[in-house]
Image 1 (tube, one colour):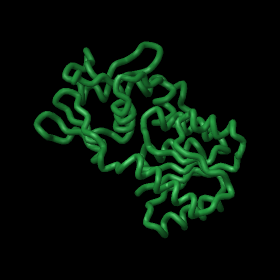
Image 2 (cartoon, helix red, strand yellow):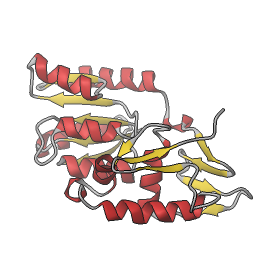
Image 3 (cartoon, rainbow, N blue to C red):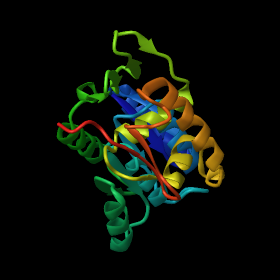
Amino acid sequence: MRVLIVDDDAQIRRALRINLTARGYEVDLAATGEDALRQAADHPPELVLLDLGLPGLTGIEVIEGLRGWTEVPILVVSGRSDSADKVDALDAGADDYVTKPFAVDELLARIRALTRRHGSAADEPLVRLGDVVVDLSAHEVRGGAGETVKLTPTEWKMLEVLVRNPRRLVTKQQLLTTVWGSAYTNEDGYLRLYLAQLRKKLEPDPARPRYLITEPGLGYRFTPDAA
């Protein structure tokens, strides 16, 4: 299982990495919220351990950024013990909350409980855009004849965010923050460029998109075929 640890304290990151690696987990580390969102997009984790007090993007903003495109379990591990902080984190989309300092055995038990509830990433679905199939588990796209449709890493990130949120509006800010980082929230041209490239590769008629829809002034929406 791949776990993303997000904490600005190097000692905490090291201690968690040692304990989890010793128990067979694959561990990625991030010290900032921006790095956490980039790593989650590049190497989707199966669990996120997240501190709230981060430089740059706050832990709450990281939760909101992740929830824009993934249901990965998020376990907050924070020194903030006030009930309001816990409520804010849970309302933003966190699944559980552990207060520092914590007992390692309790943390491991919370991790096991979360992963049992959420199941395995191997159960990722296949998403269809007409004859095109998006395999979220294999991170690949196949055309109608079974051929691989080559996407750049950035194209894949954008597509994954959209197809994981069928029929839901994904705002421009959510896409820009998740794919490029918080410093790019005004770069609307990036979105237009990469969405045009995706439409050329995936839409039956790119000039009249059926699946990757623009909501003018707001963002974008993936509209799958009706069941």
